[in-house]
Amino acid sequence: MDSDLAHAYRIRVEATGAQGADGDERVVSLTAEVATLRGELARAQGALANLRVRYHQLLEELHLLKRRLVVAKAERLDDVTAAQLAFDKLLAETQAIEKCLDAAGGADDDDDDRDDDDDAAAKTERERRRRTGAPPTGRRKLDESGLPEVHVEVADPEFEGKAERIGVEVTSRVAYERGGHRRLVVSRVVYKESEADESTHTAGGTADAPKQPAFRIVTAPMPKEIMKRGMLAPSMIAHLLAMKYVLGVPFHRYEQQCTREGFSLDRGTMCRYAEHVGATLGCIVEAARKEAIATAFCLSTDATGVAIQPTRLEDGKRQPCRKGHFFVTLADKDHVFLDYQAKHTSLTVWNMFKGFSGYVQADAHVIYDALFKGAPPEGADETPDECGPPPLEVGCFSHARRKYWEAAICRHPLGLEGVRRIDAIFDADRELAKLAPVQRKERRDQTVRPVVDAFFAWARAEYAKVSSRGLVRTALGYSVRQEQALRRFLDDGRLRMENNSAERELRAVAVGRKAWLFYASDDHAGAAGNILSLVASCKLHDLDPEPYLAEIIRIVPYWPRDRYLELAPKYWRATRARLSPKELELPLGHITVPPPPSKEQTSPD
Image 1 (cartoon, rainbow, N blue to C red):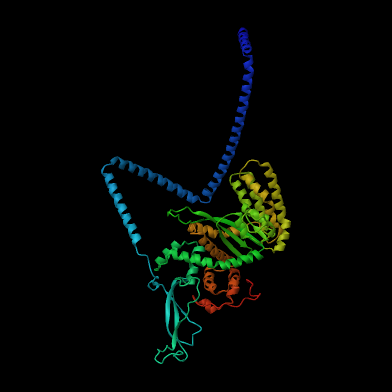
Image 2: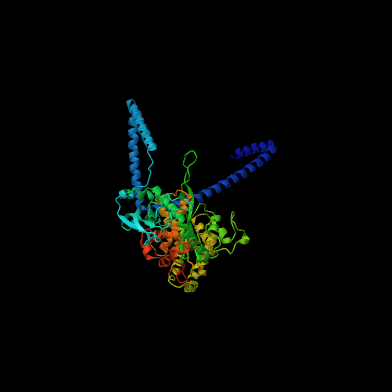
């Protein structure tokens, strides 16, 4: 064995001696190759680490989806599973039948061709009938609808008791009373007014000239209306708006309801009324908005998306729906605004809250950064020197808690600990809800502030330890970055630690988003926002939205433009007390505008 080793050693020495110069080059080449492989290994390890992070993120998303599907909607999941199994079975049977038909061939193909030709001919005939059909003309004959009648007589105060009544001019409207639809018969009195006896001869005339009659016929004018010569009475308009924007009933479903009750009211008419009336009532919303910007203490805001139907292209093809947004603004306990905005940008938020310098409670979205910094975004009309002090940001602990809850659902211990600590803050503050603002501020400093301090100390310490991306780091990062805004509710007893009230007002938009799917245009969405704002404000002040809208629709055409604020839900009870009860009882008629209120009468109470 030793001889074999010696022989191998001699061969190696001879080879080394023969290739001495080439050996150095070989070492350098191998060293460079090793360095390259190490670099590739490092990159592969980095890619593997990224894949692991992404894998854990997908697992977290899977846990959240499973929670929302199985726990929140367990029955729906079972139904979907059963339906899917039935569909798979039916699909297999259909495919088997198709194979048999393909194997048969021959005459069956001819029969199919003939059936296709018959279907095409029938379709062409239907298209021809649809195109050549005469469009409807004239007003609908409401007297043939069979609806119960309600009669209203419209007199002219100028001629009543002074001129002779010789008849009436009758028109009809569709009205609504609690209990069903009505046909509102409007009778306008026709007067015969006698003229004073005067010479029928004009200066320079002849005796044979014809005499002018000694009387004239006068018809009482129609009351002022938002929709002139419209088909619907104010009560019916208010009922339509309440059905859609309070109960979330689409117009096409209400059209079916009207057909079952024996009269025709198409969805196109309803849409026109909703858009026109909503745009007109925007004057009340804008007057309330000016008061809120000038006097409100805190504005709570949030936003949600809606679909807007675009116009068709020149070639007639349809475009996909684009996205718009509804912003909700809750001004203390006075007004609620639901504003439609085409863009979800910093400029939109800047224009909405322009001139306000109080507190603004929001969800820490990036579009609010320019507002809280007082720096006008690109496209704003003001310069930084022209802007006043920016509003103060108030955070929302519900948003912070939601991120910890998502981490807790994915079984992260830190997520569960975060939820527990934030719940302790809510519990401590809930006990102070019935106190006056000054007393609440003092008690918060004693009982709530220590719990808040402990929470943020824990969040900062844990955030420094967590380096990998995921739900836990997202939750901790939100709390650390928004600490100043989340602590803001401790500065004043009137501030809330969550923005749930504003989010609740967005439910009306969410219900509509599921019911009618999209808005026909930006203008229609803006008009809908005005109606939704008035309806939400009515609920805030414990008013029934439908009677409020019915009376407001009658009153707006008569009301002075500089006093629209008196018609806002906040002041409606005081304003209504100064109107004539007899005039308000009528479904249609003249409204006498009272003088401006005194300081005592302007109180909402």
